[in-house]
Amino acid sequence: MVVGVVVTFGAGVAIGRLSAPVQPAVRSSATTRQTAVTHGPSAHACATDSHGTPAAPLAERDDAQLFAALRAGPTPRDAVAISEALAQRLEKDHASLAAFLDRFSRERDPGTLWALAQVLALVDHPSVRSIAGTIATDTSRSRESRAAALRVLEGHNLPDVLPAVRTVLATEPDPELQLRAIHALPDARGMTWSDAAGVTAALIARSGAGEPDVRRAAMLALGDWCHDEGSRLVLVRSIRADPSPAVRAAAAFGLIFASKDSATLQALASAVQARDEDWTVRENAWRALGAERVLPDDLARVYADFSAERTRLRRTP
Image 1 (cartoon, helix red, strand yellow):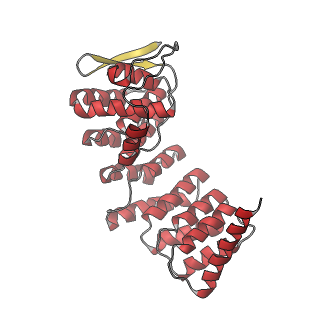
Image 2 (cartoon, helix red, strand yellow; image 1 turned 120 degrees about the vertical axis):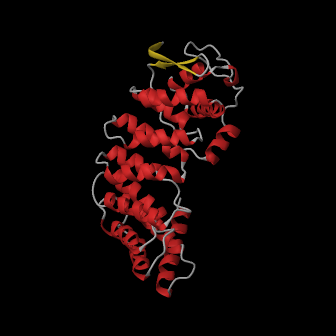
Image 3 (cartoon, rainbow, N blue to C red; image 1 turned 90 degrees about the vertical axis):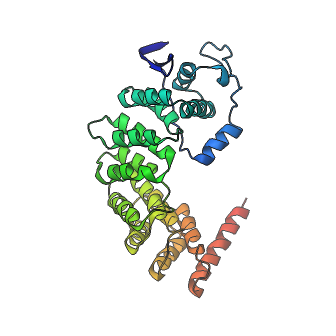
């Protein structure tokens, strides 16, 4: 049943707000989009409506029908296919995209916001990133609106989302929005030293206190953005001292791709050798140790001993 406001998109196309919940989408990228198109339900696949009647193929449904299907909470597999179909149409029709963005900027219902965000996360257009960035950094907006905007920015994974994401990460006290901002950080490859300095400073500020989920995400992101001794020291400190094994494991994983001095290698070796440590922490530290192609003799023995231990455990029935 359709309730609430019905807004027109494009030339006489209406999208209604449904009352059923919708599941947040997973992070998208060019690869994810291609996989969804290739391996997800095709544009000609049929689903069923709320009465169990076979629905029209995606290609035969108008935008309002597609959005209603998405808002009704389909399976994750169908949600990807529906979101992709809508995104492809919006990329070709700028008038409909403008109306869709207007709806997104005014929407208050959390479920509808997530459905809109799922689609906009797949629409590669500068106006999408601009509006999502404005909403994400507007502290007068609701948490739900800002979280949905960060979800959109996460899906784009491009350098021009960084200013808005970094602002939220550096200034936002809400743990949920902190976490969303960390997830929305774009890939660090190709970024400047000044970009990295701003991001790592914000991540370091989130690494020492607050919710374990935020600290864990900060450690993983810091591994991607780590470019200086200060960042590396924070990762090492977290391996040694964070009370959460999930955070310690994330810090060890972050060091896989970071440059390592002798103190960092020793900290990793200590984590590998600590038999009372969480197994994932030990294994991630072992992987980070092994990321160095050549090790001193004593550290090479630590690496080899743990390799043998892993092999024995795998063979144990």
